[in-house]
Image (cartoon, rainbow, N blue to C red):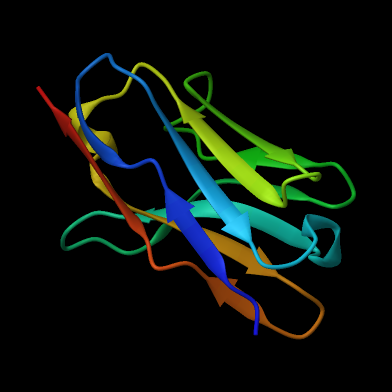
Length: 115
């Protein structure tokens, strides 16, 4: 059973920074793609950023230039560095991983940006 465990969420003022972590129970290279999604109250879950094992990276237009996705294969951990945070970034952030046959989700971590 694959486990994804997020951490690093919290309350931050607008303009501040946070780094989210997603620890996996198996090698990152075993997934076809990994990424971060978020869901604000009353809204649909949306892609924030993702990378593929082929090396491509995608960001939502709303976070380009402010967020950076990265990974540490030695720690089986993915990160999301978030800077210049805005109140509209407030949401539950979810770690996502896709293998050949399944999609996995973490439990989510709350990020709240105060104005």
